[in-house]
Length: 282
Image (cartoon, rainbow, N blue to C red; front, side):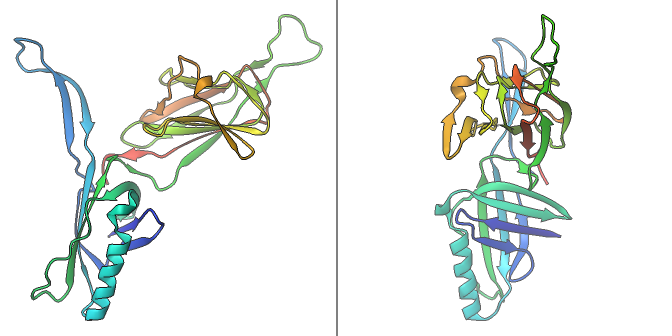
């Protein structure tokens, strides 16, 4: 089975399945154009491969309004036009295909088209979306919590002594086809927190103490990258606290060993890492 649901920027939804909006053709859900990047030196035969970049995804839906009453057809046409309004910007496309559920963000590439009915019993329609990011994603984020800090302070103490050691370490699994950006939230008292992807060697370090009533929020998604500190009803921009060697990393395909350490902290602090796996097709 295949069922497509579109939710526009106002939260209005329309479902295309069997009735009253029958899917007759759906293209662009698997295939996506790729641009191969290469470089050629003078007098070189062929060229050198550099990378492959996926182009935006274009989804085309052709269907029919399964009504014969003129008044019902008019009302359903109006409903499609209202929900699938290109002026509302990006909306969410959810696709159920043979029991698999995925979602993608897309903008209407023009208004829906309603061809002349002619001798057709049902009213045909065509809808096109452009998806700036070509990747399908799981419907829900996967989230894992880490114990942020394990203290070493004991009495009686001898010098030299450590205030703390590495916090918990865990393995996160990216089931997708490409690396996945993450969001990281640290809640609770900790000093100079650092999240390390031991699989790649990349790390994110914040050179600032996080108070017990503050939340440090980090987003590594391209175009949405942010470092923010939430306190009560205020948001403080935190890019200035980002260590200059930090890398706003993604989770690589498969297993990623993630570790949290801090210069000082509290075992009650909570670190959560969340992500949505990304897929090149459905």
